[in-house]
Image 1 (cartoon, protein in one colour):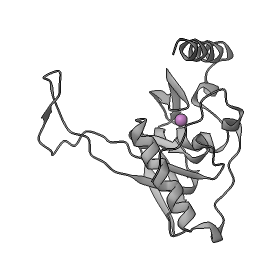
Image 2 (cartoon, protein in one colour):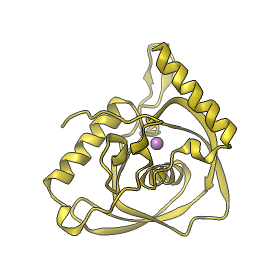
Image 3 (cartoon, protein in one colour):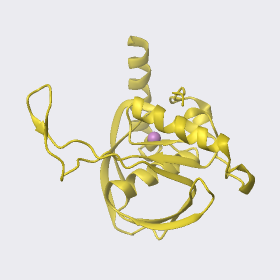
Image 4 (cartoon, helix red, strand yellow):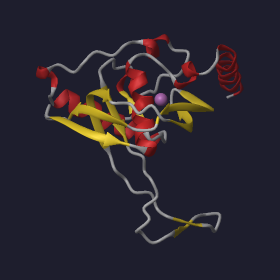
Length: 187
Ligand code: NI
C-alpha cells in the first residue's frame, strides 16, 4: 500500500469525467488502487475519496464515515473530554450509479480533500439508492440516507469532474478559491 498525492483545486485534472472500470479490469491493479485510496484517505484524514483525486480517471470511490461507535466505551481525549471512539466501516463503490434521489433536500457543511480548509453548506437529496460493483465485479444495490447519502453524492460528483464548490454561486466559489490560494501561499 502507498499514500498517493491528492490533487487540489484548481488542478484541471479534477474536471475530468472518469471512465467506467471495464469487465476485464477487476484485477490486482484495481485492488492496489483501492488499497492506496484507503491509505491516502485515512492519512489525510478524510471520509471519502474518488480515484480522480489521486489522478486516476476511473469510476472508483472509497468511503469510511468513521462515525462514533455508540456501543463502545468512551475514550478520554488529550483535552480530557470523553468521546465515543470511531467505528471503521470501509466501503468500496465501483461504477456507482445514483437511483431515485429524493425530492427532499438536506443541508450538510461539506469539505473536500481536494479543496483543503474550505467548508460550505450544500443542499443535496436527503436519500437515494446506489447501484455499484464490488472488487469482484458483482453488482449490488442499496438504499442510503443521512451522511452516507450526502457523502456518496459528493464523491459521485468527482466522477463527473464536479467539486462541491461548483454548487456555490460564482461569487462564493471565487472567494473560496481565493482563500485556498492565499493559504497555499502562506504555507
Ligand atoms: Ni471531495
